[in-house]
Amino acid sequence: MIELENIVNVRDLGGYKTSDGKLTKHKIFYRSGNTDKSSKNDIKKLVEIYNVKTVIDLRSVEEINESPDKFSEISQVNYINIPIEYSECLEEFKSTDRGLVVLYDYILKEKKQVLKTIFETIANADSGSILFHCTLGRDRTSMIAMLLLGLAGVSKKDIIENYTVTYDLIKNLDIIKRDLVFYGKRKTLTLPEYIESAMNLIETNYKTFENYLLGCNISKENLRKIKNKFVN
Image (cartoon, rainbow, N blue to C red):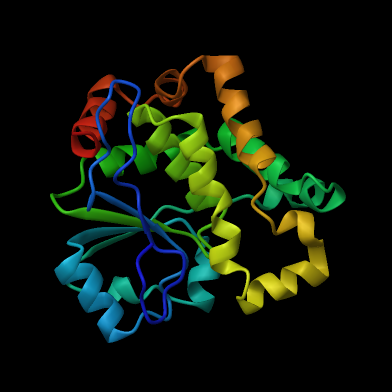
């Protein structure tokens, strides 16, 4: 966990043991909540101390218009918007207590072309760290974190833990308090069963995370580049 003034849920994906006994590298990938309220100190810390050179914003154009990303104004950072849109599944999301399972299933099945663009961008980014975020750093961000950790060979247990801690880091945000009223608690919690369902979908249909990403038409070469960046 990285403590910043105005950005919540900022975490380094480094330090996880992989299936072949290696470790994921620190200062390569960061996940976070929205950076629209980043202070000057936040930006300075992320750029100068944590070496962030690329920011991938997973939010929609509408979300960005309402709360522009401060990193889009920083010349030292390559800011890229690659939206993961999910409006088509909102009605089903609202109709069930398992709304986040519905959302993650939708992203993995229907957004393969977008995931391809995201992973190609990661593979070919300039040297330096990559920060990716959505609004809360919970759903779209968690799908990218899960796929990166899974590709690296991190255990299911650690991927689940990386996901489930999210709620504790965002539960005091006004938007979570609002969502509790509109959607109910089960649509705001980050329960193990939600991320397990996503991993089971991949395992059942593709056996491995790498096979799933190949199924998104991401080349073996780009996956190799990502693993080389990420794993010691």
